[in-house]
Length: 129
Image (cartoon, rainbow, N blue to C red; front, side, top):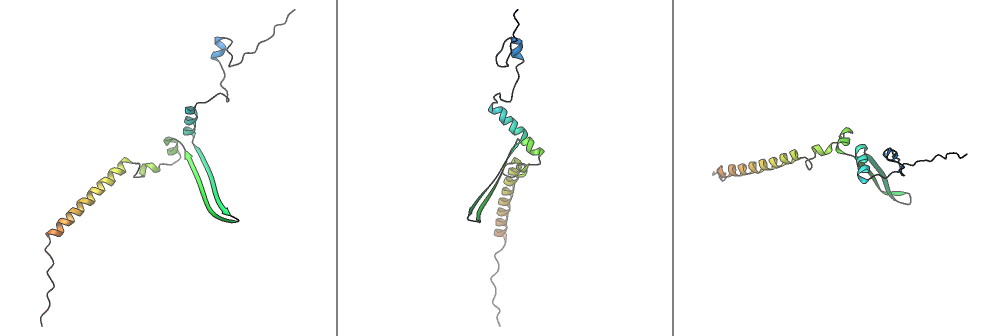
């Protein structure tokens, strides 16, 4: 009598079309750079570090580095939105700055014109006794 020896099918070795369609994805399977970037931007990542320079027991310099990498949507969820009010990043603020500069130039030209229309101050008369 011969006993049937069971064969084991592995996910990476397709034994049939049905088995290859049901392959299991494991944590060791490769991720593309786009997948990793999408995950980081979706969840966010914080990198924190301290650098200190000291001589003997005297600390000369301390640098604290805090870096947050996240998508704009994730940053807004965390309450970070500094770019919306910063004039260097907001188009509306840039328009306000340009309008302000134009108004300042206009006020300056009107003041110059007003000075030219005023009569020159009379020379101070010396009182005669």
